[in-house]
Image (cartoon, one colour):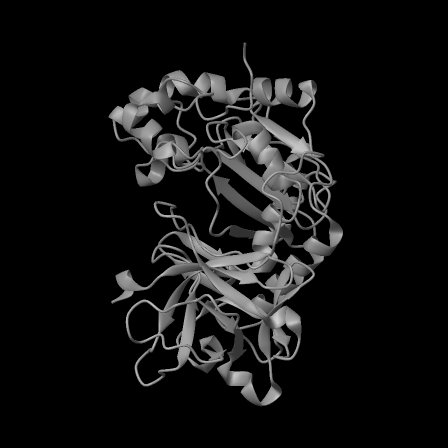
Length: 407
């Protein structure tokens, strides 16, 4: 049974770099002698580790040959808990003829190293008892980068305005890799999916390394910890890929009515979650720009500075009434507070915006001829569930921001 399968780190014998942790699924059906590496819990958007035809690794494999690995030397994984003390290579079953094995290559897990390469040797190491399994990582990255700091002005602005714009948080190669994967997926079946929750872009890749690297291989992960607290942020298992297409009819309508560029209706905003009965589904919204948004009305992230302070005292009444009003952007009811100070954040590729969950925001109009590319991560404090149960999140804006010193 799946519950008996061990969750293990894959540790490079050469560099001691850890990858995963993965749930080891041995002796699957008639595939005894092979193994699959599950990349996350059942609720995680990922599946099994796979090596595609080009040798690229993915977290969303099924149970076919691309997601099966042959251990060399072969360990008996079918009779109880195996012993993992000796080094092994993991050859991908679909690419045995090519000799492709997993390997540790410059800090990243690779799928194309030969078994003769010392970088392809690993040992399995159990996770510590009681450690929650949040999913696998395929790269080594620092949990915290001491060189990435926030100034007193950054912190003061975040407290006052409810958001922080951090230019250059993600390096260009990471941006290019994410955009390339998104574009490739858009050109494939299932690239755009419509369901009851609206249109979803590239849902199959939200947990892929090229997307998660925007968070973990950049300054973003450390900045989030600077706000929420070092070591106090739950790891994200996936992201939202948010594309915003051009609306030329809006440009024509605005020109006819004489609407100024950058105009935002004062009640056309939302905070996330209340439409689904969840008043505080996360702590911090992080948006990473993958396309230039340096002009107005090109799909910019829009925020209403300081609105979090106004909304907090009103939230308890809304929650008790079960009202989805504050999450209904299109609802311009007079029962919604009116914010006349909305701004469109002018961001460049690689910039990141960090927004308090309770600050009013929206996606901006796109009257440009280009698609706006954005990825959103929704991050939570490690005690987020407890804070919901106790009601603290309806009373204290800063209970989950230990890095923000209000003394």
